[in-house]
Image 1 (tube, rainbow, N blue to C red):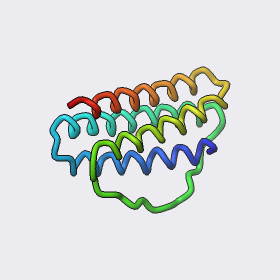
Image 2: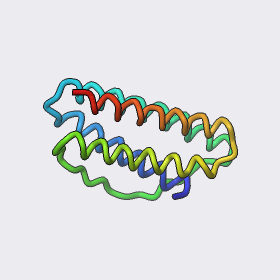
Image 3: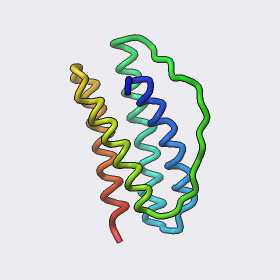
Amino acid sequence: MNFEQIVRYTLEYSNQIRYYHWQTKSFAQHEALGKFYDGISGTLDTLVEIWSGRLGNIKVDQGSVELVDYTDVESVIESAEALRQAWEDFGDTIKYGDVKDQIDDLVTLINQTIYLLRLK
């Protein structure tokens, strides 16, 4: 994935997380997903601004988001793990320290959320 593609993936994913946040019946999951959504928004914004300052403004392809109904926490965790892997793979291709720092912050947020979702 290139930067524009992974940004789009993350934007779409954040909308899905907000939807899960509204649908879960668990207060703990509701809180964890809300914190995750808020964190993704701020961290991704900073990352795109840093990227744009270095390499110019980005253009994300238009598309549509199909939201999936919440079924179980394991599905949410699996999707978070896929997002984490995408950012880790992309991060391995980046040489700019400030960009890598923000990617690390995203991965940290994902890992923390996975931990919180696994709590019983």
